[in-house]
Amino acid sequence: MFKKFGALCLALFSAACSAPDAIYVSGSSTVLPPVSKAAEKFSAETGISVIVNAGGSGGGFNQLAEGQSDIGMMSRNITSGELEAFKTINFTEVAIGRDAVVPSISSEIYEAGVTLLSISQIADIYTGDIRNWSEVGGPDRDIFVIDKEANRGTRQVFMDVVLGDPKAEAAGADLVTGSNNEEQTALVQSNAGIGMLSVAWLNDDVRGLAIVLPNGKTIEPSIENIRAGTYPFVRDLNVVKRSDLKPSANQFITYLLGPDGQKLVEESGYIGIAN
Amino acid sequence: MRSLRGLRKLQGLRLYALACGTVSLTIVFTIIATLFLQSLPVLMAENTNLMGTHWNPGKGQFGILPMLFGSLFVMSIAVAVAFPLGLLAAIYIAETRSSKLRRVLKSFLELLAGIPSIVYGLIGVAYLNIWVADLFDLQSGRVILTAGILLGIMILPTFLTLTEDAISAVPVKFRENAKSLGLYRHEVFFSIILPQAKTGIAGAGLLALGRALGETMAVMLVIGSLDRLPKPLLNPLSSGQTITSKLGREVPESAFGSVHFSALVFMSLIIVCITVTLTIVSRYLFRKTGADV
Image (cartoon, rainbow over all chains, first blue to last red):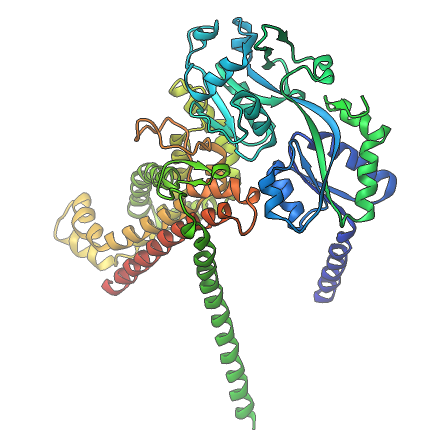
């Protein structure tokens, strides 16, 4: 009995020891969908296992920098503060796709007539100066403002455009969420919510807003506008590597950039980088 | 010869016990020392407004007040939910049911205490959160009240089973003497049993409080993660943040050794200090009950 148990333990132990061959990827929940799909196919083709975890861009960078992962996923660029914290390490960002952060609202408000907002209106909503949908042409209902955790790439891209500072505080926020999934759920459950989502998370219950630019032009959150870069919240989806990257992980990044990987990026609702 | 070997064996056992004891003590002290050391950077850093209300790591603002307040607020709601329920249920089980039924009921309750907190969290997200939103006509049920109720349900089994132990521990002779004096059942309970059991009940309450303060996952999922004091201050229908939910969300995002990390460690030091105090006081109370009986 105990011998059997011992043998089982030994087998498990040796299996666990062989795991270091695996490639560990973690970070942005926006970059995650194409990467996890690619990981599956890559593993099937090469036999190298790839373990993909979410956790946000900031978390992805920290895990990479601290050596807990091989590749970080980031939906924003590395900040100077982050580079400062790990001066001795050399990081390279590789864009694998392009995405837009879209100011998104509950479908009830969209159907009631709010389909576009200017950047300054969005800014006023997030600073708490506009508190009711009627002030922007919607029904008489309090705006439920959903913010995201400070280190999330989506938030930093969004706040950089809206308030001119990726670290700006949003005094008007009523709720703070983490991943895209969490934010999407909060928007669906609310009937007067506004939040920020990656374009791949929009659906019938969560609608993306068109943006009125300062020159009066209205830009729809369409694939063409994101590809052309005219939608104001366009960003690159990056994977980040260190100079001491192991060969198998490098092979995986090459796969992401290749035709198979890029196809998965587009299937996930983003724009391939070759375009 | 044989007894000598026995003695050696005994000594070996003693050494082993000593080693085990030392290891566990070392672990406790290492944790507390680490928390202290890692808290230093934020205590030394300037202009962090540590006791302020603004938390913005990007700008070097580490006001922990909203989280501290959130923890205490959620804990108070949990207590308000769990204590009356727990106390009455404990009285019911201990005083009115047969000992056989008592054992069955108690084992179910103890089963409840063993359910992982993430499971409660999922139930909170799937149902409680929506019920609270519907009931108060809110845009989102991820508010302090939801977290408080959920936490109340979570600490209920701990509180209930310990309270029930305290009530049942009152010796039968007290009850029988009281009954033979012609006291009514409620008189027996309130004048004889409750005074005997009250330190035990208080101890149970404090242990449950400790659990409420330390709970992370379930709270994190339903509280709304807003690092701000509610407006007005005692509004339970606003989103908030507890120290533990803050730690759960931000520790993976902070770089080890940064001031940000240090601020998070400082908050955990505070929560550890509070729970250690609660545990010590409750142990003291339990010991007192033991001596009384």
